[in-house]
Image (tube, rainbow over all chains, first blue to last red; front, side, top):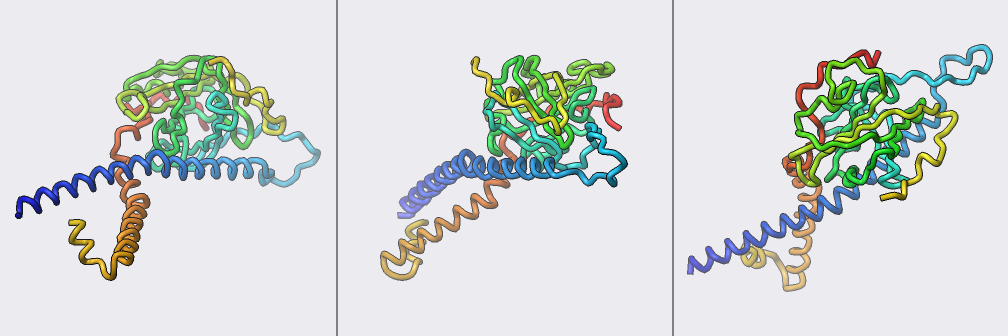
Length: 235
Length: 63
C-alpha cells in the first residue's frame, strides 16, 4: 500500500515538474517577450518625444543662429540616451539604448559599454543586446549583411553606420569593442560601432559581433532620409 | 498529493473545481510574476557582452 502511495506521489511530482517547465517556456517565449517588447517600444516612443521637444536652450541669444549639432554628452549609468534602428530587422525595428551593460540595463533594451565612444564620435561605440529572451531584440542578428544600415539616433543627430562584417568570437574577446576593433591600443582615426549579442541563439558559448563604420551624421533638424529606413530586399 | 488537496477543498464538486482552478491561477501568477523572472538570469542565453577586462584602451573618445 505504501509503495502505491510512493509511486503515485513520485508520478504526481514528475507531472508537476513537467507542467512547471512547460509554463516556464510559455512565460519565456510569449509572456516575457511580449511584455518587454512593449516596454521597449514605450521607451523608444517616450525618448522620441523628448528628442522632439526643444532642448532647454540657454537663453535665446542674439540672432537666430541655426542650432548647430550640439555635442553628445556622456550619459549617466542606466540613462536612456539613444535609439538604435536596424532596417534589416524590420522598417520599424527600434530599440532603446541605455548606458551600461549590466543585466538590469539589458533587460530593458540595448546597452552601451561604458568607456566606449559616444555615438558618431571617433573611436568605437560598443553596444550589447539580448538575442534570446527579453523580447528577443537581436534574434535575427545573423540576417544582417555587409552594407546594411544601422542608425543610432540621439537627441542631436542621426548617426548612420554601414555594416562592414560580422564575426563570431569567444566571450572574452573584449578587444572587439576597442577604439579600433580588434586592435587594442591603436589610436583610432575612424568612427566605429560594434554590436555584440550572444551566439548561438539560446546559447552563450560565443558572441555574435557586427562591425560597422560611420557613413554620415545627419543633424536632427534635417531629418533622416526615409531611404535609410527601408528594409533591404536582397536576402 | 493532489488527491489529498482535493479532499481538503470545501464544498461539492463544483465548488472544489472552482477553488482548484483559482489555486492554479494564483500559482501561475506567482510563477510568472516572481519565480520565473528570478530564475531566468540563471539560464545561459543571458550573456551577450564580451568580457575581459573592460578594455583599458579608452582613448580620448569622450570628454
